[in-house]
Image (cartoon, rainbow, N blue to C red; front, top):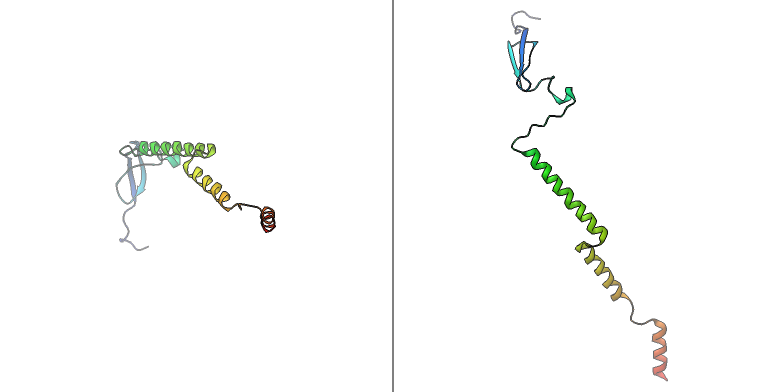
Length: 118
């Protein structure tokens, strides 16, 4: 290594803003301030810490609960066949089968034609 071109490596005081502890480490700057450290970070502690900014977490949870309620109501309606879309499709299927059914069977047609010819 060349001399005189590398910064000085020293013991550094580190302060955590989240939990307020101070500890020492090594760095090229004399003091470091961090927002979150290994003592309070969820990865190291195993505890989840939710920072709620302007009620966003609560707002998300209420939207999620509302969506779950609507989904369960829709599932019940489909199971009870009260869903208007399901009823509409069923009506369409019933009318199609009625319209496509032949008016008379071929045996009846031949009987009528023979009666008319005599």
